[in-house]
Length: 475
Image (cartoon, rainbow, N blue to C red; front, side, top):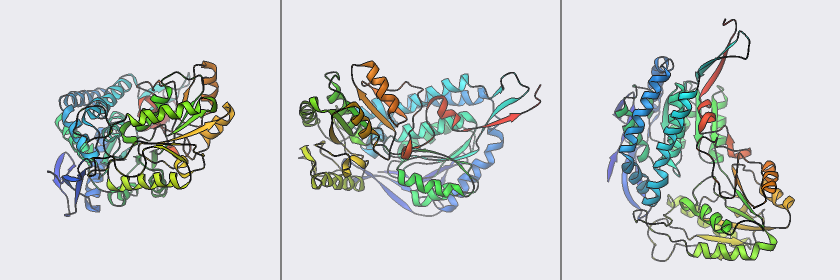
């Protein structure tokens, strides 16, 4: 069991001000894998004060200095890649091969992309042919609050552009999966990050989270998590007009037309189940043209049956557990809601897979004949649960797809390029993926409606941490 009760504040690992320990649970076997401390107001204040004190010097650091820091960080991260993969696998249940291939590498991918953006970004430029000058400055001291489902991905998508923009920051990772962030803090320390630029305090949302979002010395909040928490954070930030970036939930529709390619359904099921269904952009509603619907249901059934579930430390392609008992119970309740509301349970259902009675394992589940007003069609389940809905026309598919509070990522499967363009223009979502083609490395990530405010990744992600100043009479 790991003892990780220290915080990283002002360039040092320091003891928590009060003894308030929390067990970190390995979701594969329900054992305690680490102990962390939950921060108090004094810890939050110390971290914010360190970030505030570091801001004057870091905000005027050169682009070359920031690039050099991130390049050193990249090299250290590459060397410690397996440490990161092992930590993520243990703390949130990602199967180790998946953790190595996707979870851990998301950190280096973010560093690489933001280095590319930083190298080409100009912090001063003329405004057209006027005598005005545009100056891009850091937003200031940032509170960065990250989730457990793609932990280092979300940490890197916030910390790296904040550093690149010249901000200072306090990171509060999820208390369910804090170990990867602590390794990341070790990497930044080894890379020579100036004291106070990056600080880490562990805690829960009601404690450190609320303390940060209402703190008078915080200038910006970047949060990834539930829509409910995003609303509370927005209220906390409103009194002193903090800048807020929110990446929240989703209930993606995957529209499969009858002319879709042969692998469209299988690809959609696997994408829904990826990361044990714990992704905000998962295509959890599969809308299928009625003439193809029965065949699609059978393909989805066979794909789910062939999807294995096992412990995270086992090598191979399988689903691991969901992150916690609370998450397991929520998913079980929603599966029961689907049954109670008379959706057709095709495969899976309540309970744990046979032989996996210990750990938070969920059966890969497919519901057919779902009405879009059912609980399972409107609620973000965050587990390996797919809802299949038939449609009769292009217009009906668009209407069903948009009939949700969310608007993060939608999907279209058709071999008619004009249809794909026509439908994608009418999707109320920040991202539309066509025929299984994922976004480019620098593409902005974020959503409409209750899926959030702002964008992460690429040029848009860097600009999230930047204020714009106009100076007249520059010439």
